[in-house]
Length: 108
Image (cartoon, rainbow, N blue to C red; front, side, top):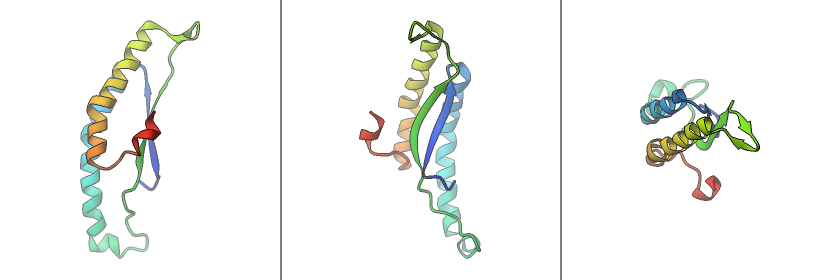
């Protein structure tokens, strides 16, 4: 990945919660693989050397939910809260361990 930042797009549903949980398991493997690839002599000496892992988590974005009278409907709000909880409880610790977070002030 050659981007500096990444977003996790979601929609207010069960599948987004599962996807964030899955991402929590995949990111440590990606980070470990990138570290191994960076020291691989073939990739180090390639015309386009394997880039350093320096991308950071920018946040999540929740899309495609219904707003009535300026607020999310109850059903959507429930899933939005579950997404936030899954990010906080599962994804954020993984991101911290792998140095994929920006300074805390950015996320407020």
